Image 1 (cartoon, rainbow, N blue to C red):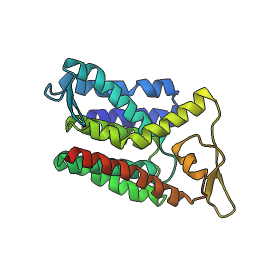
Image 2: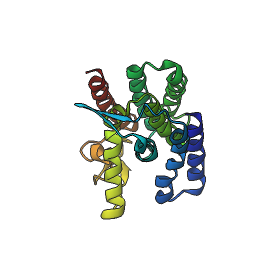
Image 3: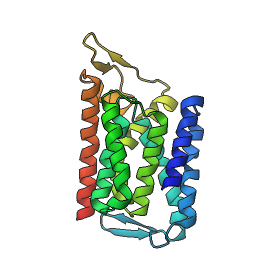
Length: 232
């Protein structure tokens, strides 16, 4: 996990300074998955579904793991831009993984770090940037693979993936990016629906902290559903 997180932080650092193109950001997380592909335990090659499980055999490590890491890392990175949003949503998902897996030895320290970052970033004292978001995204992906909770992570990531679909559709299909505005009271709003954030701000003006808390609740609801399904 440490190797993948270090790769994510390095990738985020380059993105913050060099503004990497999306084609590179989409492909680079594959390399972060290589350590697990090489040394990954062969007994964790199954994907649990509602009515059972599917064993992918050797194809799991070679195909499923890199694809999963890429999707999770990039979709997580795209839901950000507000104080406390990246760290807080990552904390919620990681706590869900820890509750189901009970792997507090592995996840205890990352949870404490994310809790501190959530507080500092929500209050505007630090900005984690792409360094933090890519690292957190990789942490979630690798933790779910190690603890064999891939279905749980997939359900928990639904808001992130939906947000990415809206952004990609806006940027590459209709080529029209939405802009978030601020009214006289300092509240945020949007005229167009081009992301999960602008979807919520399209119908109601909200302060930055309010929209972050609403997005927390959206992510938390999907994590709760994922935890419930894992406990069935």
